[in-house]
Length: 107
Length: 122
Image (cartoon, rainbow over all chains, first blue to last red; front, side, top):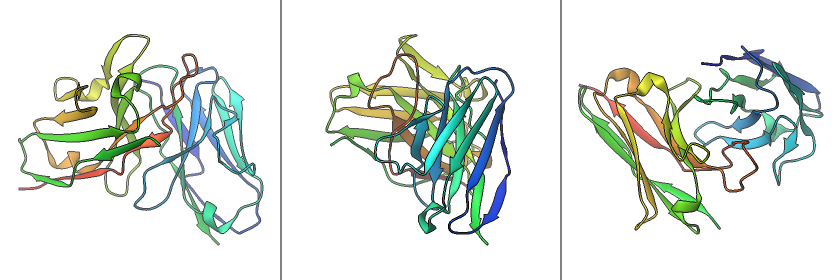
């Protein structure tokens, strides 16, 4: 199975900050990488697919980049509603493994 | 508008089985690839399996092989996930999810059900 490792596991940050979350794959997954946002008690929400394509309706302050084994999710200027947990997921092959998550907390 | 509506919470004893349903509304089940993801309390997301349109069959995560069965009833546009030989570690919220817009061989989950809490306890 492909292992997905996110860093950091948690981040204390403030409204207006620029935040970057990284996701590393244990082997090359080309651009087969998705990012999700999850808030407590809610289902995950797709933010980015194919490593860098913004899902319809997702604010442009979210962006994704990367290829192969190294990927990043960047939030250019944090808003209060962005404090949540973020997950990467590879869909290069099955099982479509998720990273362990990165929790953004208010400083 | 497409929705996935899941069945209600379940409490099961160790060794029992659970069957969770996921009804599609606003679309046809045969045109969607349903996947199942679970989340144990306070933990991350875990992919259980789903329909692979390229393979033309349901693919299960190896970890659950022999214990999990995913089926579909096209007459009612309802997908099912059954997990057997339940143990306490299977306590989790189980989600069905799908990709509403195909894009080559890229796969993502842009529509999710509300989740079903399955509690395994003696």
